[in-house]
Amino acid sequence: MEVTQNLEAQGEIISHLRRGNRSRGRVHVSDLVLCLRKSYLGQVHKVPPTEEEMLFWLVGRGYHAVLEDYKHPSEVALVRDDLAGTPDQVVLVNGQVVPVEIKSTRQSVNKNILENFWWLITLKAYCYLCSTTLGRLIVLNIVGDWKDITPRLRVFDFRFTPEEVQENWDWLLARKQLYLSSLEKQTLPPLEKTPAWMCKSCVVADYCKEVP
Image (cartoon, rainbow, N blue to C red; front, side, top):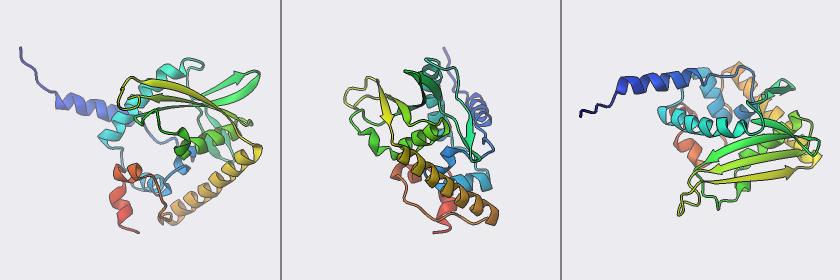
Protein backbone atom coordinates (compact mmCIF):
# COMPACT_ATOMS: atom_id res chain seq x y z
CA MET A 1 0.00 0.00 0.00
CA GLU A 2 1.21 3.50 -0.83
CA VAL A 3 -0.13 6.65 0.86
CA THR A 4 0.60 10.17 -0.39
CA GLN A 5 -0.57 13.39 1.19
CA ASN A 6 -2.28 15.41 -1.54
CA LEU A 7 -1.34 19.04 -0.83
CA GLU A 8 -2.98 20.26 -4.03
CA ALA A 9 -6.35 18.83 -3.03
CA GLN A 10 -5.96 20.32 0.46
CA GLY A 11 -5.34 23.73 -1.06
CA GLU A 12 -8.43 23.43 -3.26
CA ILE A 13 -10.59 22.68 -0.22
CA ILE A 14 -9.22 25.69 1.71
CA SER A 15 -9.79 27.93 -1.33
CA HIS A 16 -13.37 26.67 -1.57
CA LEU A 17 -13.94 27.48 2.10
CA ARG A 18 -12.58 31.00 1.64
CA ARG A 19 -14.94 31.60 -1.28
CA GLY A 20 -17.85 30.55 0.89
CA ASN A 21 -16.85 32.91 3.72
CA ARG A 22 -17.11 36.23 1.89
CA SER A 23 -18.09 39.56 3.41
CA ARG A 24 -21.80 40.18 3.96
CA GLY A 25 -21.70 43.72 2.52
CA ARG A 26 -23.71 45.79 5.03
CA VAL A 27 -22.09 46.48 8.42
CA HIS A 28 -22.81 43.50 10.66
CA VAL A 29 -23.00 43.27 14.43
CA SER A 30 -19.99 40.92 14.36
CA ASP A 31 -17.88 43.70 12.75
CA LEU A 32 -18.36 45.86 15.85
CA VAL A 33 -18.35 43.58 18.87
CA LEU A 34 -14.60 43.16 19.35
CA CYS A 35 -11.72 44.75 17.43
CA LEU A 36 -12.68 47.58 15.05
CA ARG A 37 -9.13 47.58 13.69
CA LYS A 38 -9.44 44.00 12.51
CA SER A 39 -12.77 44.78 10.81
CA TYR A 40 -11.29 47.91 9.22
CA LEU A 41 -8.08 46.25 8.01
CA GLY A 42 -9.94 43.22 6.75
CA GLN A 43 -12.16 45.51 4.70
CA VAL A 44 -9.42 47.83 3.40
CA HIS A 45 -6.71 45.28 2.66
CA LYS A 46 -9.07 42.38 1.81
CA VAL A 47 -6.78 40.03 3.72
CA PRO A 48 -8.17 36.49 3.40
CA PRO A 49 -8.57 34.36 6.53
CA THR A 50 -5.63 32.15 7.42
CA GLU A 51 -5.89 28.40 6.91
CA GLU A 52 -6.10 27.99 10.69
CA GLU A 53 -9.01 30.46 10.91
CA MET A 54 -10.83 28.73 8.07
CA LEU A 55 -10.48 25.31 9.70
CA PHE A 56 -11.75 26.58 13.04
CA TRP A 57 -14.64 28.17 11.14
CA LEU A 58 -15.29 24.87 9.38
CA VAL A 59 -15.44 22.96 12.67
CA GLY A 60 -17.83 25.53 14.13
CA ARG A 61 -20.05 25.51 11.06
CA GLY A 62 -20.32 21.74 11.25
CA TYR A 63 -21.70 21.87 14.78
CA HIS A 64 -23.92 24.81 13.87
CA ALA A 65 -25.44 23.01 10.90
CA VAL A 66 -26.65 20.19 13.12
CA LEU A 67 -27.79 22.33 16.06
CA GLU A 68 -29.53 24.94 13.92
CA ASP A 69 -31.65 22.22 12.37
CA TYR A 70 -33.02 21.46 15.85
CA LYS A 71 -35.47 24.35 15.61
CA HIS A 72 -34.74 26.32 12.46
CA PRO A 73 -32.96 25.33 9.24
CA SER A 74 -30.76 28.42 8.84
CA GLU A 75 -29.66 31.79 10.19
CA VAL A 76 -32.20 34.62 10.23
CA ALA A 77 -31.08 37.90 8.60
CA LEU A 78 -32.36 41.04 10.35
CA VAL A 79 -31.62 44.76 9.92
CA ARG A 80 -32.39 47.86 12.01
CA ASP A 81 -30.73 51.29 11.80
CA ASP A 82 -28.83 49.94 8.78
CA LEU A 83 -27.02 47.47 11.04
CA ALA A 84 -27.38 43.79 10.22
CA GLY A 85 -27.50 40.77 12.50
CA THR A 86 -28.01 37.07 11.91
CA PRO A 87 -29.25 35.08 14.91
CA ASP A 88 -28.62 31.37 14.44
CA GLN A 89 -32.27 30.77 15.25
CA VAL A 90 -35.38 32.73 16.19
CA VAL A 91 -37.78 30.57 18.18
CA LEU A 92 -41.00 30.93 20.15
CA VAL A 93 -40.83 30.15 23.86
CA ASN A 94 -44.19 30.32 25.64
CA GLY A 95 -45.43 32.57 22.85
CA GLN A 96 -42.46 34.97 23.07
CA VAL A 97 -39.89 35.55 20.35
CA VAL A 98 -36.39 34.47 21.41
CA PRO A 99 -33.20 34.89 19.33
CA VAL A 100 -30.73 32.04 19.74
CA GLU A 101 -26.96 32.09 19.41
CA ILE A 102 -25.02 28.82 19.04
CA LYS A 103 -21.39 28.73 20.16
CA SER A 104 -18.85 25.93 19.95
CA THR A 105 -15.70 26.46 21.98
CA ARG A 106 -12.53 24.75 23.17
CA GLN A 107 -12.85 26.54 26.50
CA SER A 108 -13.32 24.42 29.60
CA VAL A 109 -16.91 23.80 30.60
CA ASN A 110 -15.90 25.19 34.01
CA LYS A 111 -15.28 28.68 32.63
CA ASN A 112 -18.00 31.17 33.49
CA ILE A 113 -19.77 32.03 30.24
CA LEU A 114 -20.23 35.63 31.42
CA GLU A 115 -16.49 36.09 30.87
CA ASN A 116 -17.19 35.83 27.15
CA PHE A 117 -18.67 39.30 27.14
CA TRP A 118 -18.69 39.45 23.35
CA TRP A 119 -21.27 36.64 23.30
CA LEU A 120 -23.57 38.73 25.48
CA ILE A 121 -23.08 41.86 23.37
CA THR A 122 -24.13 39.87 20.32
CA LEU A 123 -27.10 38.25 22.04
CA LYS A 124 -28.38 41.58 23.37
CA ALA A 125 -28.05 43.04 19.87
CA TYR A 126 -30.17 40.22 18.47
CA CYS A 127 -32.72 40.83 21.23
CA TYR A 128 -32.97 44.42 20.01
CA LEU A 129 -33.37 43.27 16.41
CA CYS A 130 -36.18 40.94 17.51
CA SER A 131 -37.82 43.53 19.82
CA THR A 132 -37.48 41.32 22.88
CA THR A 133 -35.51 41.10 26.11
CA LEU A 134 -35.26 37.30 26.03
CA GLY A 135 -32.29 35.49 24.51
CA ARG A 136 -30.92 31.96 24.44
CA LEU A 137 -27.32 30.80 24.24
CA ILE A 138 -26.46 27.23 23.23
CA VAL A 139 -22.86 26.35 24.10
CA LEU A 140 -21.01 23.24 22.98
CA ASN A 141 -17.78 22.75 24.96
CA ILE A 142 -15.93 20.53 22.51
CA VAL A 143 -13.30 19.26 24.97
CA GLY A 144 -15.34 19.18 28.16
CA ASP A 145 -13.33 20.40 31.14
CA TRP A 146 -9.97 19.47 29.50
CA LYS A 147 -9.49 16.59 31.97
CA ASP A 148 -12.51 14.68 30.79
CA ILE A 149 -12.62 15.59 27.09
CA THR A 150 -16.19 14.38 26.60
CA PRO A 151 -18.06 17.23 24.84
CA ARG A 152 -20.68 19.02 26.93
CA LEU A 153 -23.77 20.83 25.66
CA ARG A 154 -25.41 23.54 27.78
CA VAL A 155 -28.31 25.92 27.15
CA PHE A 156 -28.64 29.27 28.94
CA ASP A 157 -31.68 31.53 28.89
CA PHE A 158 -31.21 35.27 29.47
CA ARG A 159 -33.74 37.89 30.45
CA PHE A 160 -32.16 41.28 29.97
CA THR A 161 -33.66 44.56 31.11
CA PRO A 162 -34.95 46.91 28.38
CA GLU A 163 -32.25 49.36 29.45
CA GLU A 164 -29.49 46.78 28.97
CA VAL A 165 -30.72 45.98 25.47
CA GLN A 166 -31.05 49.64 24.47
CA GLU A 167 -27.68 50.70 25.93
CA ASN A 168 -25.98 47.83 24.14
CA TRP A 169 -27.55 48.83 20.81
CA ASP A 170 -26.64 52.50 21.28
CA TRP A 171 -23.02 51.43 21.97
CA LEU A 172 -22.97 49.38 18.77
CA LEU A 173 -24.38 52.26 16.72
CA ALA A 174 -21.64 54.56 18.06
CA ARG A 175 -19.02 51.99 17.05
CA LYS A 176 -20.65 51.66 13.65
CA GLN A 177 -20.25 55.40 13.10
CA LEU A 178 -16.60 55.22 14.16
CA TYR A 179 -16.01 52.25 11.86
CA LEU A 180 -17.66 53.92 8.85
CA SER A 181 -15.85 57.19 9.54
CA SER A 182 -12.52 55.34 9.62
CA LEU A 183 -13.32 53.67 6.30
CA GLU A 184 -14.27 57.01 4.74
CA LYS A 185 -11.12 58.77 5.98
CA GLN A 186 -8.89 55.70 5.45
CA THR A 187 -7.56 55.98 9.00
CA LEU A 188 -7.20 53.19 11.53
CA PRO A 189 -9.71 53.16 14.41
CA PRO A 190 -8.13 53.68 17.84
CA LEU A 191 -6.27 50.73 19.34
CA GLU A 192 -8.48 48.90 21.85
CA LYS A 193 -7.92 46.32 24.54
CA THR A 194 -8.99 42.96 23.14
CA PRO A 195 -8.73 39.38 24.41
CA ALA A 196 -5.13 38.14 24.14
CA TRP A 197 -6.09 35.18 21.97
CA MET A 198 -7.52 37.51 19.35
CA CYS A 199 -4.29 39.47 18.77
CA LYS A 200 -2.16 36.32 18.97
CA SER A 201 -3.83 34.71 15.97
CA CYS A 202 -4.95 37.85 14.11
CA VAL A 203 -4.52 37.72 10.33
CA VAL A 204 -3.99 41.51 10.12
CA ALA A 205 -1.68 41.85 13.14
CA ASP A 206 1.26 43.02 11.02
CA TYR A 207 -0.77 45.90 9.54
CA CYS A 208 -2.00 46.89 12.97
CA LYS A 209 1.50 47.02 14.47
CA GLU A 210 2.54 49.62 11.89
CA VAL A 211 0.30 52.22 13.56
CA PRO A 212 0.20 52.20 17.42
